[in-house]
Image (cartoon, rainbow, N blue to C red):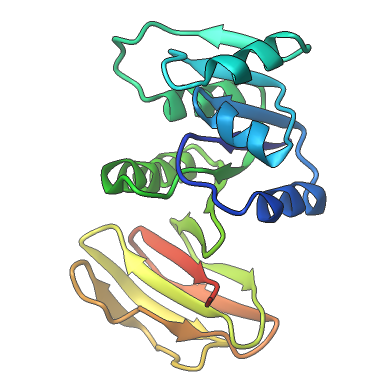
Length: 214
């Protein structure tokens, strides 16, 4: 089951997100509070809106309340962010593959927190991606073959102290059983050579970032 989470971060190009919606098949679409504003601007109809409802615009709320969209309201004083609550909703409904819009943007603290949510999702066996007009981020806990486009920029960033025995195949700059250390930029801006690539490592947490150049 595949889900989509829409958060309250910056989503500038509404057409980009609507095109992604058309290209994917999402079984469940959930907005995290003000993410409903983004959904409304992008012409996306969610199944549910969850959170403390302090960011959703009154006219947007009124519109969605006139539809069959489910509202799940939470108190403003809570331990989880609205994004976490939306993730729990999606996972509880059975989603094991998730795309997340509006999770990167002006607030670096929220963006970093959402990157680390990818780690927790991976540990729960959920394949999750943060997507915006320029970036697509996912976390790997083990080796994986990935689909790529020739010339695509792909960065590998350690989220653990070390990512050990890293071997890269299908990249312009290959590695063979090397260590990527947190705090160093060794894995930044590699380039895919063909339609697939292999990222192998024996231990660690690795952020894989695909970058679309302007």
